[in-house]
Amino acid sequence: MVLLKKVFKQSWDIFLENMRLFIGVFSAMFLVSIIMGILSPKTDNGLSFQFIIFRVAANLFSMGLTLGSIKIILDVIAGKSPKMNDLFNKFDLLIPYVLSYLTIMVSALLIFIPISSFMLSEIDIVSILRLLVSGEITSALQELSYGVNYAPLFLFISLCFYMWIRIQFYPYLIVSQELGPLESLKKSYMLTENYVLDLVVFIFCLIAVNLLGLLALGLGLFITIPYSLISTCIMFNYLSETKGQDSNTSYDEITN
Image 1 (cartoon, helix red, strand yellow):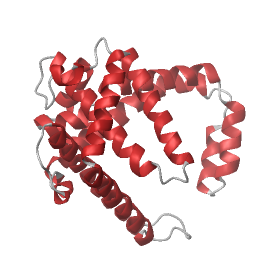
Image 2 (spheres, one colour):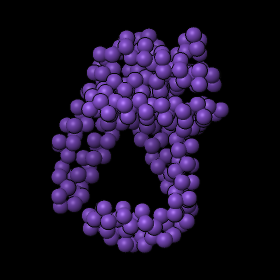
Image 3 (tube, rainbow, N blue to C red):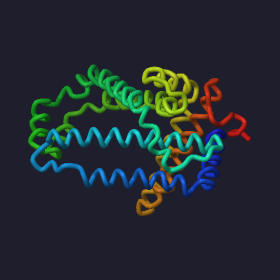
């Protein structure tokens, strides 16, 4: 837990030193999401091909901005002087990022399929699908809540959470080392070995920090989200250093 205290302290120091840059980056990403929401085609008459294409393009653009924000933070930690336009300079890494994301989704589905027969044994799937198609989302959720077996559901959530803890640093590996989708997932899994408990506590601390930001009329998120991203980058660099991978922050910089 000493590690977590030092990571959070260094993150705060870096945030204070570069507050305008980090708040500007987050504000730009937030503004883009608002504009995309405004421009999104209407769905009053159901999902249209235009809406699907727009959402796919919007999500890809958001992913590109995420990669750019990671690069900016890693550069700041390394002592470089990135600029706001660097937020748009990592779209060339979208393909491995998207492929990694799809690999995670397929893996979660493969875990879900064998467990679902126990989890949803008392649910009429056809009835649920009929409600969803007709737009009765609330009724579908109610029927799901009545028929779910919670022990298998807890097992599924626990497995997914554990796997996410182990592979969460794949975007940082894609940005810092330009790894492919499978290699980035594999290396993230290796980086987090023996650090699962620390990372679980770390994630719950970040959740608590962002909840506090949300309670402050949501305005606190302009501080807590950049701070959380910085903390995650510093944790990534520490794990990279201890596992002998390339990093932007040395072990001594974190522990001193």
